[in-house]
Image (tube, rainbow, N blue to C red; front, side, top):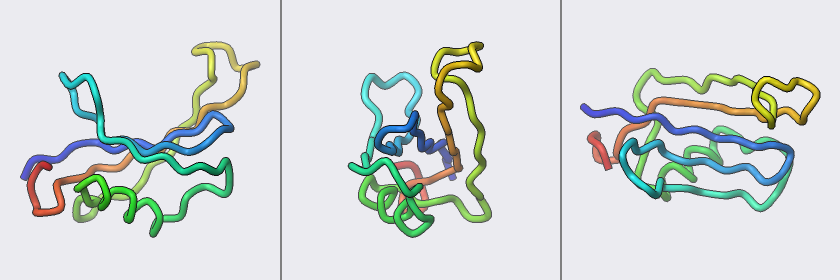
Length: 93
């Protein structure tokens, strides 16, 4: 079973969820047109499903933060969540 990483991020604007496809120029992406609240687990599952993916069995979301300008903690915070995903048919989409 091939797994990939999905990430969700916001820098204070709209939330975006995307599946990382190394070597590709465009990644499957879903965007919420709101700035808050943070999309729920159910909303994230639905967004992933609309892109053809699901959270891999046993995987959980992890959160980290960074600065908008890398290394400058006086700039706005960028929140990033990540989870392991697989294609909805049990393989890669």
